Image (cartoon, rainbow, N blue to C red; front, side, top):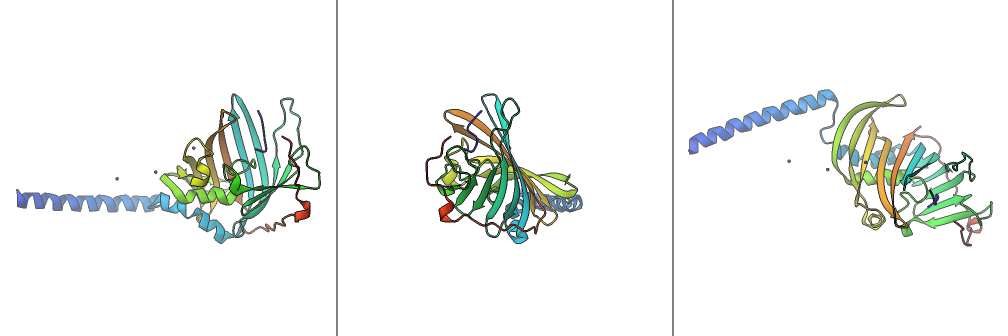
Length: 263
């Protein structure tokens, strides 16, 4: 990982009873739906959340701010990222800031990360890598599918997890940086290709969608074991400034470091 240390339903008398019960149930259902519409709550929270990734693709691009909190053995660190993302091309560029050491001193320069389908490129990755070279990781080979490896969760991957949202409940309307959003809570099944890298096959989430159905904030809570020690991760992704320029230029083959990376 970039940092090594250290949230799912008799005959005449019986017929008459069933008929009356049916009418009452129908009336109650209509009343519930009317109240639901009046309150602004969606009729099917799970279906609404599952469309979030598609809405982002339709939006095209956005600015991104990320925060990844990692806790193990009483030690807690936070990695932050900021940049832009193109949902149609599944590519983005983020500047990732590592936490300071125990003395409050920044240990390393910020890492530049380029996100692309199947690959993660990092500059200033660590010791042993020349300053003008990039490190390339094949995300398909990562046990976590790059949900936590890069210190940020790929924004499209974070939204894609919501396609398998289960047990979703509608929490209510909130304000997020001056934007009215709807808050949903549930869990998302991890793809089989990455589930083995985590302690559980599903992750709890809190998702916030704007009036256009676009995902503005999502917080996932992962848990996995690293070197025999349990690690709790809370990954938060903020999306805003939809339509911003998010052009990404991937490094040429000659700029990729092919040597050994030191921890």
